[in-house]
Image: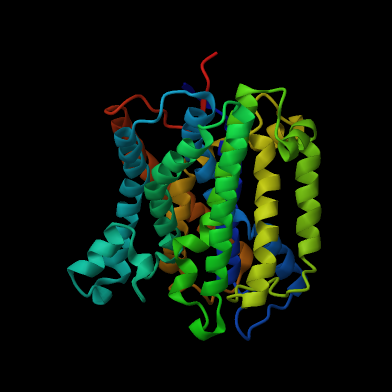
Length: 399
């Protein structure tokens, strides 16, 4: 098994992070509805919210795909299983150094009075602040998602072991992949059930449970399902699994279908479009299957071995987008701190375009510094437990 770099995955990561920054900047500038406030241009707000809402789910699904694929290959193709020590070491080096830099800056600048003691700091440092009411420091609101990433990295080897035991009992690659898909479907159902729990009216608006990992596991499972289908397609290219066969034949049409679904989603009868409000139980349960489908449609054409739409490839591989993808983790971490440092709070900016220039430019500059000063040096340490690339490479079979 070797690893191969696919620039389209770098490109879609960049697009997703730019969308995250755009929607948060729009919220800061009053271009999104919130509670009793409604923006002047509601059509723009709806389009903005519907076209950016899958940004974080795409990032989760990308993690599911990239991290699970070597495990999927081990089960489906019988390749060597990933070394768990190297796996854990690389995940720590990828996530924590850049995050610690942001945490130090934000704790010193904006949160000195909020530090209540050792356990407060420990939760922040270990990315467990999402589980404590009021535990997310000011300026680090977007880092609640780090708790989901850490939980996923910790639980994935257990899922891979269980899936390997069950799927390994069958002899054919496609049959093994289908068993993995059944397991991923179970994870999606767990996420859906937890979404129902976390959106109960009795928990109130914006309960802490809404940020807990199980509610987001469905998007990670979409990436894991794509990893299984992609691995099976590499082993048995003439026996693609149903939906994946259609994606392989019509990658451009798959993206067009995603566009149509998003446009129709603008007219959702469940409501909530164009706002940052915490959705009601009915809205959340109506929206999540559609969100999962959109994420699948967007990412699936980028995962089929040997198949690429020329249009998709040309869009996602342009050089500026590739570079943004390289520093995208830093941009994600720094864009909220930039908003606070520039604007003083998450709300109240009066010019959306000005805010976009400042927040995009500021987070990009901070991310470049973070990448070369912290992230790249940390990633050089990854090879101490086996060779690993710096780019989002994909585990593939050695031909």
